[in-house]
Length: 369
Image (cartoon, rainbow, N blue to C red):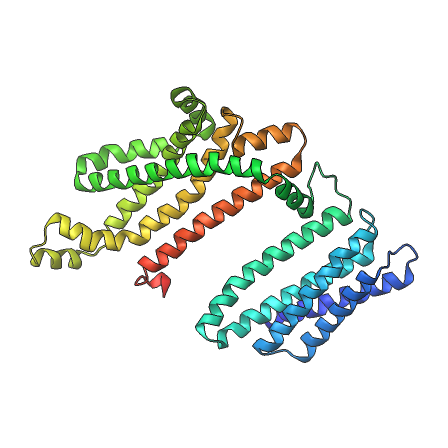
């Protein structure tokens, strides 16, 4: 860790000095108060990183200084959009390395803070990573003048998202609230119920599991048109695709979970004269919960992907997949990225809610301790 830390501080300081030198020497370098403000804040950040190397307070101060510098750093692009030179890119690299240093020190300092604060740090670190990913994306697309048809800036995507909220909401309801949730509930329920039956019958286990494996291998682009012919162009055909995609992961994981209890545990239940149902609900399903939630989390992403892709093969004039395919043809790439952002947020929220429920129900499992 010390080598990585030394590299980030040393590399960032060098990048900062290079940017300052180019800014002074080059007559083509663009100067603005925003650039000078960002330069001063980053210089102060590296002085702080060298002088105060340990402690949660020092890491937090470094984090604040670095992110304050990011604001004028992005604001400087407005003084020469599409014409940023080496001085700006050196300062951007310096800012990225300073953020890396702050996250590294914050992670190290989190080990000595109370558990509640440690949990907040664990949530803060991926958020910081996402923020800098968006900042670098914004800087590259606007500073280098990347054509919007290739990759729009996050600010353009955000502006399109705000101005197209009614359309995006209608697409979200059609795809997520109807097709994804309906197909997800049906697919997981059928997979879970089938696993209970298969566990009870060796004949079904030998015959049905291979068939389920074959169904899971069917490509979406082959299944989706068939489901459209069977169930029509509305959300029901997309829900059917989601059912097919989510059935097998739930079946396999539930079967694996039902066999997770040890022989000694099952023998103990027999000594208590427990019936099959009592053993199932009080022992085997409890032991299977981590496996079941694993399937639920996998299916949360599969369901959204399946619903969006299946909308490419026939849908009413609404839906995320329909909007993406239509707007790509019109070269409205900012609208495409706005739909992708909505899908990413919905999928992440869905997955995160399942993780929270899992932690509350499987607190006894070693993975949650």
